[in-house]
Image 1 (cartoon, one colour):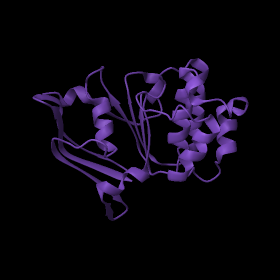
Image 2 (image 1 turned 45 degrees about the vertical axis):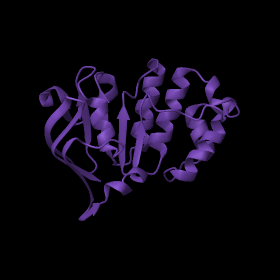
Image 3 (image 1 turned 90 degrees about the horizontal axis):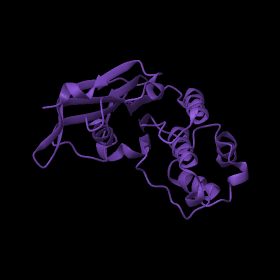
Length: 206
C-alpha cells in the first residue's frame, strides 16, 4: 500500500510537532523516521495509522490504482509501540486467539506457531500481566508483524529487548515482512538497520 503526505502538519495547542511534510511512501519499501525524543516520530506514526488526525495537509492511501478511504485503513495496518496496551487479564494463548478474531494471522501462522516462534510454549497459560517487559514487547511485535496487513508501523521496536531479543526481532521481521510497506520510528540504528529510506523529523520542525 502506498501512502502520500501533502504539506502534513500536526500541532498540540499552539506548538507544532511537525509541519510542511510532503513525501510518498511507496508500496513495499522500508522507511525509518529519525530524530531525537520529542521530534515527532511517534506522532507521525500515529497519523500514518489513521489513529491521529493531521492539523493541516492531507494523507492518502492507495492500493494499486484504487484509493483507500482512511476510515478503512486500520484493518490493513499492523502497529506496535511501547505505549500500546495488551489485555493483561488474558493468558498469552487467549490473547493470541482473541487478536486473530479481528486481525487474522498471515498465511502459515496460527496461535500454536506464534507461541513456538515466541518461545512461549511453557507460558501459554500465563497471564499477560505476569510477563516481563521484554516478553510483553515480543508479544506486541508478534501480533503486529504476524497479522495480515499491508502496512507495518513499528515505534521503537527494540524497547525492553535484550541483545537476544533484538536478534529475535530481526529474524521475525525478516521472515514475515512479506514485502509490506514498513515504517519504523526510532533513534537506534539496530532498530531500523533494514530500512532503505530515511525521513529526518528535525527537517519539519517549525
